[in-house]
Amino acid sequence: MEKILEVLSEIRPDVDFEKEEELIDGGILDSFDIIQVVMGLNEAFDVEIDVEDLEPENFNSVGAMLDLIKKLQEE
Amino acid sequence: MLLIESLQQYKQITARAKQLPDVLTNCYLLPSKVEALTRQGRLYAVEKENLTLLLERAKGFFRVYYYLSPLCSYEPLMLELPAVIEFVFNGALSKRQRREIQLLEDLGFSLGRESARMSLEAGAAQRRFESGETSVAKAEEADMILGLLCRYFNPLYAFIPEKEELLDAIEQGAVFVVRQVSRPEAILFAESVRSTATIRQLLVSEKARSRGYAKNLVETYHEKYREKVRSFFHWVDVNNSPAVRLYQSFGYSFDGRKANEYVLQKKEI
Image (cartoon, rainbow over all chains, first blue to last red):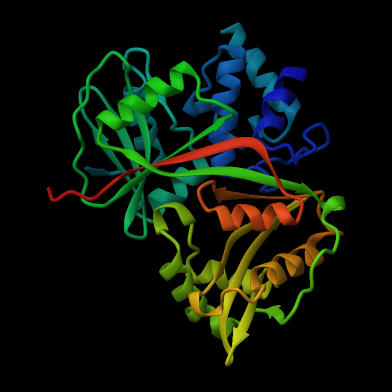
């Protein structure tokens, strides 16, 4: 969780990621941010986030991103 | 160049593109964005043996998303419109990023603009200057505002709004102007989402410069959003020293996030 927060905070230090539950649906992260989030998470966790994973529910909160990363690491 | 007509087709193309050895990509479009672009007929693909490009057609240029391989060699591309790639990074470029940029340069892209992000905590955005004669833009000024934006900003970098988007922003009171002889001659186009506000564009026409209008506009922008957001941020051309100095006078500082825009000029096919 800490590592995800570190990645996200570098991209958008202005956002309180621990609180937010609608990062995509709420328009807090735009498409430009998403590219950076995905690239950052891919690098930090040595995973490959696929087109199929690019659904808002996987990125709306830190918890959702953590679940996604765990799923990818198990594959 | 192939027009992509559905999300399914996009997924098929990207699935093929990922097969490149050691693939490098910046293509992470949300399905909702892909669906919107395909509905509007604005998403294209260029598929070659050693690369795939997804081209988002904007007004007069393409925004490019790529799949490349560091194990392949490339020659300059030819596209029917100028093209831009945004390359965002923190601090310094990594070895992988430098290799990626080299490949883009082999394709004919060159560095167009270096931007960096500046930010300011809302609590620190205390009143420093006067708001002067700033006021909120009116809907009937939209065409004049767009005319100024197109004259002073390069559309490849500036995310110049469509008229509808500008009218929405005017309606929300997010566009501020200073008028001379009833015409906007200085403009600040702001945007706010939840806990942040950002300046999309700030310009002062040549004939209206040296009167403090830019400071007036930024002060007005802070006044409007200071109590509503946690922070302010925006991207600035690092070589635009007057702009950098202006924002620094309000307490903004660089937060380490950078973005280079690489441009491919139009070539006759």
